[in-house]
Amino acid sequence: MSWANDISPKGFILLGFSDKPWLQMPLLVVLLISYTFTIFGSVSIMIVCILDPKLHTPMYFFLTNLSILDLCYTISTVPHMLANICHNKKTISYGGCVAQLIIFLALGATECLLLAVMSFDRFVAICRPLHYIVIMNPWFCLRMAAFSWLTGFSNSVLQSSLTLNMPRCGHQEVGHFFCEVPALLKLSCADTKPIEAELFFFSVLILLIPGTLILISYGFIDQAVLKIKSSEGRRKAFRTCRSHMVVVSLFFGTGIYMYLQPPSSTSKDWGKMVSLFYGIITPMLNPLIYSLRNKDMKKAFKR
Image 1: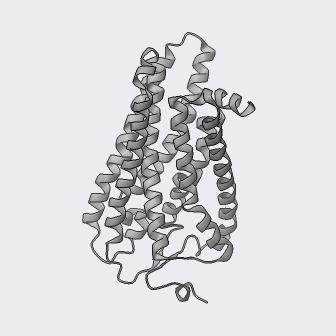
Image 2: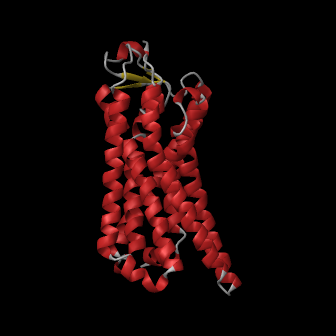
Image 3: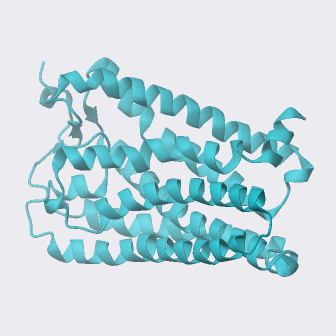
């Protein structure tokens, strides 16, 4: 039975790597491992940060938000991807595709902004320690978190509306694992350049500006770390900063590759692989890099 016979006229076919069946099993293993680690790591961090009073600080407040993001981010795509691989079912309803697109875009944009806020928190803690409590007060932290979430969902609604309103002339085969803007735009039978220009503008606001602010924050942090007299203290600080920057670079670098260039110029298979990094791998690494290597978090787990 063909996939086309299993799909409603308004649904979509998610091709994934169906033209490369030898990749199905390795992909299944990667998805299962990353999904398990992300669920376990994110839920553990959320529980510990909420239950341990010693972790009721701005840093762990933002980490809790990041864990919620990563958890929802992964759940929005991976279960359906696993079902498609295990049952060889490549279809998704129109409503399911819309929900997946809106949620994935919203959480991805929110994470970009939240990572920038977290880098600012570290900048204040290391470079302005005497003013930390005043600057990072509970009301300010709450507003920054709310701003990240609201802006992320607002951006998602705008980008999703622009993408879904493009005429597709009956095209249903999405060359991707899940419903994402670049893949859906390739289905359009009209000129997508005006839409691409608008989407590029939103992507600059969500990806490039926060990414630049993160680099500036860590630049100041590196300067402050160099002034630490203890060589052991400098080494630990640099190790932590490097770990953070690796994950941030992976998330923003792959996101910029996908969203700050025309969909037509993106290699079909390479685009799929890149999306796995910011959609699957980074949420798995975040709990490890940001929390599970943290001494306070380790002590909280032991308690």
